[in-house]
Image 1: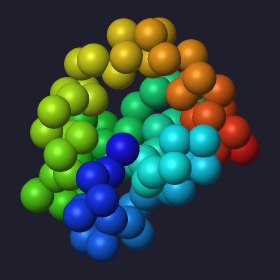
Image 2: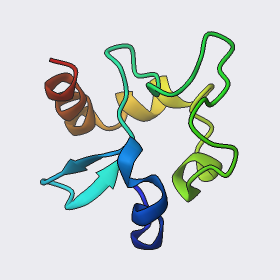
Image 3: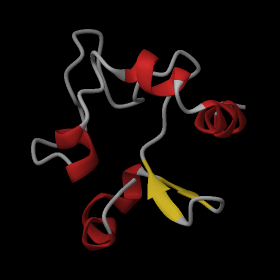
Length: 80
């Protein structure tokens, strides 16, 4: 989730989740951030949002998603 003060800066890259009432960065069907390239480098900005700095999406996304099935359901709806 984006911090409220980050929405102005990163909102164009995010989707609004009505259940969470927050902006989130989208993931693909494999649980990878849409903005990672083949080398797992972020392609949208060098100054990452706090959620990206706090969570290493190149290593922890499988564990994170397995512990958050409701997010997997949300991501599946976004992927269609």
